[in-house]
Amino acid sequence: MRIRHALVVGGGIGGLAAALALHRQGWTVTVAERAVSLAPVGSGIALAPNAVRALRELGVANEVRAWSADIDGMGVRHPDGRWLLHRDAARLWRRFGAPFIVMERANLVHILADRLPPDSVRLATRVYDVQVGDRGRPARVSTSRGELAADLVVAADGLRSAVRSQLFPGHQGPVHAGFTVWRAVVPGPEGEVHAAETWGQGGVVGVLPLGDGAVHCYASGVVPAGALFHDERAEALRRFGDWHAPIPELLAAGTPETLLRDDIFHLAQPLPVLHRGRVVLLGDAAHPMTPSLGQGGCQAIEDAVVLAYVVHDGADVPSMVHGYTAARLERTAAMIRRSARSGRLLHRESEVVVRARWTAAALLGRLPFDVVARQLSPVVDWEPPSLGEARGIRKR
Image 1 (cartoon, rainbow, N blue to C red):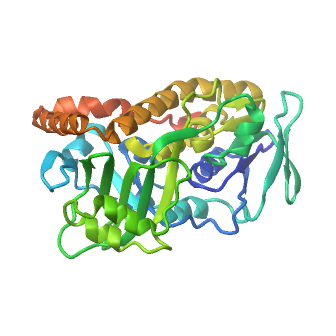
Image 2 (cartoon, rainbow, N blue to C red):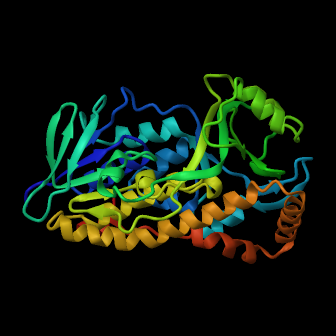
Image 3 (cartoon, rainbow, N blue to C red):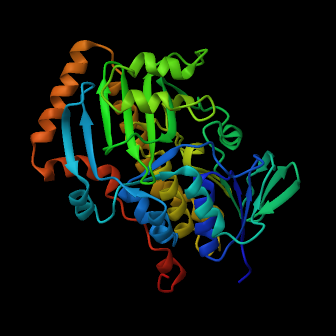
């Protein structure tokens, strides 16, 4: 059987995970990344048990764990510092069979990229046009380095995916979710820092220790799309600077270079399918969602493992990719809807709604553990297909 070639458009977490998954299935892979470096702009990423299990199928879970910190607990706090809800992470780990972890995005990118064959990643390579191909013809991709043919094209080119726009020209595309996120990895303060989200009026602040003295901090608030502030750090501090410690200190530690600000967009209407011909969409190119569930990167890693399982031998890619849509569309559409609802609720500015939210969180915190676990199960209790079984061999 001849070796199949996959071209991955985009060298982010989703694209590299897809390239690695396909490589482990025996495909030759090429990653076309328009940036001159794979190093993402610095921030952290939280990985839930569903993503950790998918990373096991990619053969990188142990290395990821070595570069990450376990989340010691999950909780919600009031802006004055009171715990409204807290659950022990060890118990959640036992329930879901894998931990919740957090790490720097750059480290995850490098772990994935380092497992690929040399010269698989082509930096500074722009993709201009994609011909989707069919059973009798390969896909053809026009790039800044010339035209490439591929048995499979994986469009992992992010929120503003040019490939998605080409394949679905009539689709509305991402719409503004109504809020903005500031995020940074900063030195942690003295003393113990606990993982938590703090819910306030019209905004949320998350604190996730990275385990090496650094902390990933994010803050979100209601801001119109495209609105800019002369000093983004000052704006974040104006909104959240009187919340409990260490939030003011963490936000103040951000610099113009490290404090990132992004308007949040998502798909209000999911795509009808995730493929055309020999081309599939993956990650934010397929299903951009708000960060309110922390599932954007997790779903991209899930996509990668499922795709590699579905097209494992590449015998009939145009038929096989229907299985990818069948396996992923319903789940990712549900995640888009669920994260959108959560985002709307967490950014309501009505004092009545905010107080009701605090009361609901406190009541949930008093419920038995199994009740809380059942709330999380639809999101994180997902099992990946076995790539080893798809190859007909025992997993490594």
